[in-house]
Image (cartoon, rainbow, N blue to C red; front, side, top):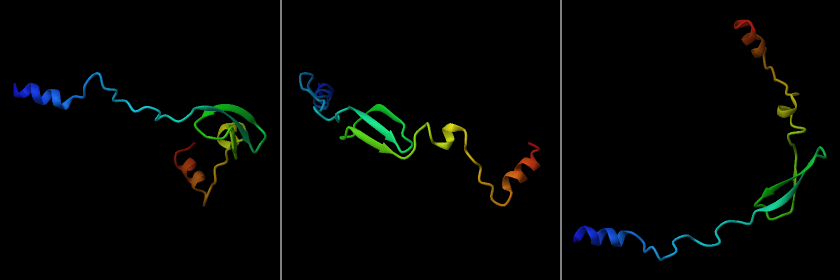
Amino acid sequence: MMRDQVKDSACPAKSENTMKQDTHPQYNEVSVTCSCGNEFKTNSTLGNTELHIESCSDCHPFYTGKQRIVDTAGRVDKFNKRYQR
């Protein structure tokens, strides 16, 4: 009998609504403009309808393949020479 009382008191009643209402932010369409001129639309919880960014996948060196390796004191050359690349 004691076990049933503890179990019932630890669980919320099934008829009760235990989920909080209205906790999720609004999810709206946003127009994104890059400094390079590229424009695209995406969804965001941002309150504005426009977003201005500095770099995107069209102009960022990592995505365009124009990434440069900064060689300080010939470390890249030493590595390549050591492992004969």
